[in-house]
Every structure is written in C-alpha cells, then in structure tokens.
Length: 185
Picture (cartoon, rainbow, N blue to C red):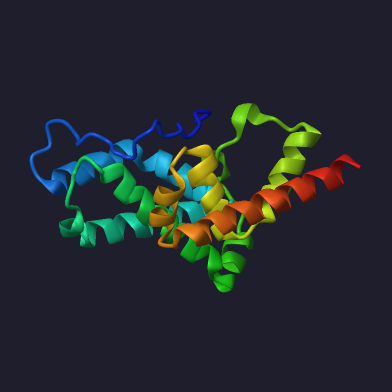
C-alpha cells in the first residue's frame, strides 16, 4: 500500500480498458483496477480513510447511474476523478458526517497516502497546514499541484469557474506559506 498517486502527464485522458466491449464492462474493469487510487485521491481531500471510501463508493454508484453521459471512454479516468473529487468535497462539507466518521477509529487510514512514512517535524507541519485548508482548497491543490491537471481542467473537475479555482489555489498557497513560516519561527 506504500504506492502514491501518480501525477497526470500533460493529458487527462486514460485509454479505454482493453478487451471490454461495453461501457458497463469498461466501468467495472476500471473500478476494479483503480479503486485504491480513487480512495487515495478522495483521502487527500477528506483526510479520513472512512470518508474517502464512502466518497468513492458514492462516486462509483453515481458513475454507474450516469454511465450514459460518458461520451468518450478514453476520458474515463478524468470523468471518474471529477465525480470522486466532487463527492469527497460534498461529504467533507457535512458536519454531521464528519463527526460520525471521527467518533470511530479510522481503520482505513492506511489507504491514505503517506510518502515513505515520514514523521519529520517539517512533514508534520505540512500535514497540519494542509488539513487546515478548506476541502475546496485541498481539492484544488491536489488536482493542480499534485496530479498535474491544468487550472482549467481543475476548475472543470471541481465544477467551479476558472477564476474561482485560481483564487482557491492562491489562498491555499498563501495560507500554507503563512502556516509553515509560523512553525519555523
């Protein structure tokens, strides 16, 4: 489970699953192959393994119901990332859901990314600063800075305007800089 989410490389397309005839077969094969990656993606937004798994499950259910809206099977990864990120943001906004999830031990925390299991003071400060961001700011940072989506693609994935996304990224960077410079002093 020590693998990390691989950043996108210049394109948001993922080739269709080879050997799958219908969209339903392609979706089923894609779900099986990318489930853990989607949980790690949602986990970066939610910062809880339980909420991340719930967001992915809700996203998979939503994708299955809306499978006819997938026009280009080559963009399946982008389409599913969009659904999962929006579900993670939506679930993270629900205060009652977050309280319910935090009352139980997070046995799914091992699904969340933790590069090399670092526990240095700098890593802990970065984690705390990242968790202090709003879910929308975290999602924008993960999609743009970590996964390499462009600002316009990040905005579309999040269902927000380009200027709103730029603003979220700017505010997130400013807050991270402020929080991290406080910790150094």
